[in-house]
Image 1 (tube, rainbow over the protein chains, first blue to last red):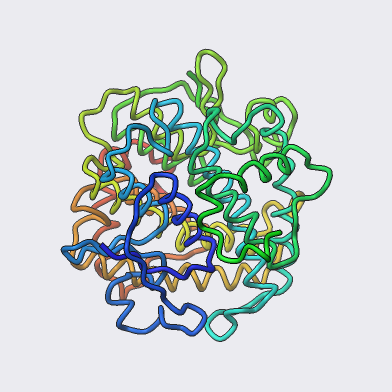
Image 2 (image 1 turned 60 degrees about the vertical axis):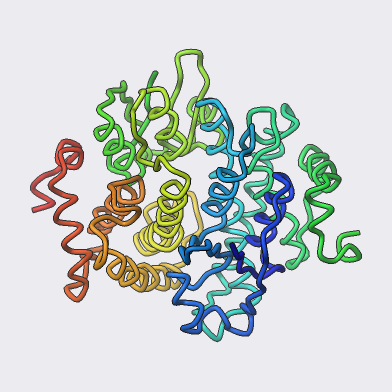
Length: 212
Length: 212
């Protein structure tokens, strides 16, 4: 198997943390997204949407989308417990919080980044006003998480899960817009400090100096 | 159990089609979203993000997010097969296509609708230029689906799945912006015609005249 990725991207980071949590090693191949390597035909022949991360199985089957990759690798790794939950209620609560994080935190965060930085303006229309709205929506969603973490050690079902991994990858990434967790959200800050101390997070840190 | 929903919303529709597919009846309670009933405290006490659909269990536990609700109800219904896939590869392929649909079709579609119609301008900042960009991104994503459906009866793993249900609910909803599947996408049109004929889709149709 080969995992095509762009290590700096938050989606690559969440897959890396996930793999470290389940203690699975997979061959990695870096794809130069910013240089446009992913929009060339050679990569698009593998990835229907031209996006990373992408997992290529030994028989040539390609699986895109971070969460699909995580589900597949966890399934074949024979873990006794799942980062997506084990009981029907755990699965539902983790899916719920994961989706709240993805749609109300990650999507606005990424749209803020792309529309404010204009990093991909060579290949997409950039709307700075939407970037600003998205940044405000990202910040407006954080108190909901702080409230949940005031009563719970982790986001969902009293266990570390995929929801925490995705949230960490986004909050960590938003330093690119110089956005830290606000001081009036102590529970989210506590959760972030604890998450940073996990072996899976420490072992996948690319630039320790930048996170100090 | 009670399912709080707003029947006209595409997220309510996908849960309804899903429930019809697994032949499960649940008590429904309509929430007047456009009148703002969901942003009142009484509803927010149940739903952490104030969004529908929301499933309230008999013990008062509340599960938000359409897909979390579908996963939970399918788990407790004792189905022999899952609309999210059964083998690791099926689960991965369905998750992959479902996410492609959600992030590259559904998100732009809903952002186009909200920013072009301004339907929630009483409670969110509307950016018409982003609505136009989103509409173009929605349309730009459809050929990728048409290509997949040129070689496959369904979106993923040669079986009807959650990915098809979400795609149907969005394409159907986009009639509000007078957007039909373009004539140069015959495979997507074929898939749409066939999906409309499913019992689960027919039995959850609110306004047959409008879909003729």
